[in-house]
Length: 264
Image 1: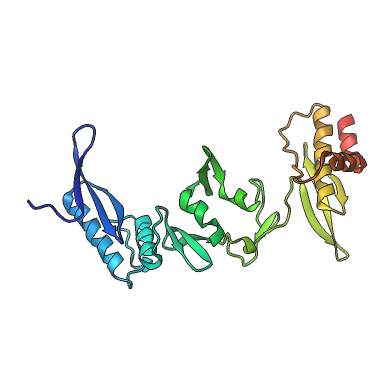
Image 2: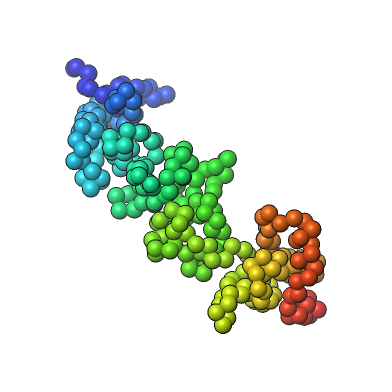
């Protein structure tokens, strides 16, 4: 039987024969996957060739019964249209790109993030999207200053309402610190600090976010000194010198309710 185009025979460790499919386009050798039969492997090659040679073929033509995975459709169409091959399901536009999970489900990222996501595959577990980075699972929200505990439309928001649009200009951080929330009073913004012990205690209301964040840290320190065994995460004050931090820490007043709790 003559060898089918794009099909290569391979063997598993136990001796079982399987078939690999690949295609070369614009001098780029592209692996299309492994298959149980040479016919299926050739079908993948034929479909890939059809996609690459026909500009009218789009992701709208994808069928779940396709011999090629959806991710491979995205990779091939992007290579055909934009001349660059990514192993991850990325389709680039002039100033942003799409990262696809299914034809109807995709994230939008700034072009500045293209190198990162072309080298970091996004996975999903329990509704959380993460990448493997330096041997750890990193929630992609953290890349945009969104903490793991953050609440949508309370601590952060997507300006255009699209929660899949991660372009930097579309993400607004409302509350960057643990225990801090902002509010308006007579047209002026203030920052309220709360901490949870056996309920929510208001630590205080402050004119700046920095003071509110340090007030939270001060409350955490007092509770820990009093033997409260709870894993509070203090706020990290990036760019603030130790001396400036110490001055504010000393000057900031916290609610006597915290002191009262400690004396109970």
